[in-house]
Image 1 (cartoon, rainbow, N blue to C red):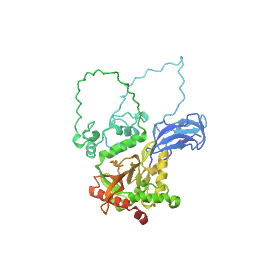
Image 2 (image 1 turned 135 degrees about the vertical axis):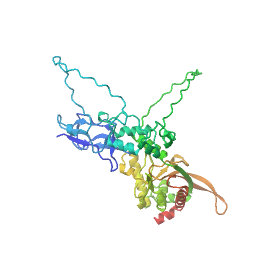
Image 3 (image 1 turned 60 degrees about the vertical axis):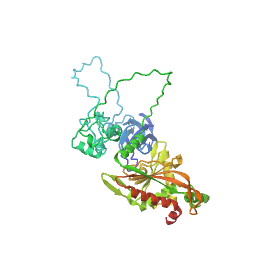
Image 4 (image 1 turned 30 degrees about the horizontal axis):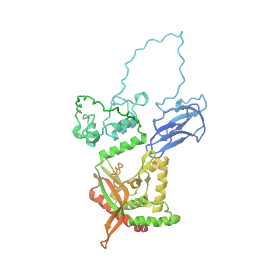
Length: 457
């Protein structure tokens, strides 16, 4: 009997995956445990193993398709077995060619030719899947006319998700007006074309045509411009959409400060000298800064949370994310319950998760649930920058490089000390300047007295 192989559930938080590459084709003989496909979520790449053996009877999806988890992606069995019952709704599998009609066959009566359907169907009249409708409801934007890629032109979630990447957004007030039936223009007057409440009910004016200027004769033959197109990967589209949404829906501002790390550098040198005795041989300044951030979060719980739908959720657990540059793009592994870790445990876990993220095999569950994020660009020579908050978090800390500064000592003499640069971006809708400044002040004190932090645990 034919058996189906399903799209695996790559983590508790993953509902669908992209099938990026098939490693098999119809007619191949496969065995249990053999790698048959590569899939990816918005955060990681995963290899799919065969859970059955036999001959590949059908492939139910194409490379690039977005597929719900636990859905059959192929059928395996003995040649000639019926696999129709395993095909997901709307899936198209290879069929045998129909025999051509013979000359003796009587011609079929002429059928009335129906008018061709328009190439692009209006969203209001096209069938839309429940997941697609949910996506539109949760991501207010100007929905254009769409061509559905599902069965019989059905508009599915990936269609509206792709349109969302390019279409202008709606402000919360504009979205409420749209729900009441107020006409929505194609674009608005807000940042990035966002439709504001003042734009609702208006029609975007047509751009005035400008007379074409006569081309100037080049002084010499121009060098041919060679253009290389680089399509966005799925993960890059997700990153771009989330960052744009973050900037469009939050009142973000950044406070900058610096902390004296002369003592921290000295402590790190002493730890290095002890080798593996302390279990901290691979510790770096970034690890020590992150440990101080965890302690500061415990002292300032108002920074450790999320904001969505006009509700602030503060967490008792410090789930700290740290930005990683990987071959597939930006990833943010998350240390869950980081407040329970020792410095050694945290350092070891960070190194392990960073390697898994770089290799592309980190579990999606370890890329979700962050309540605060640290982004360290000091190794790239960056002094200060304005990191963008990962919604719905309340804040993100940027860490820059260490700079040597002349300072006046207690005796009045000038001495040189090392200072690290800190940039704290917050959502001003929730956190005002004074609480943010107090958090930075606490963090500065913890960094400058790190040995006491370690003693206190």
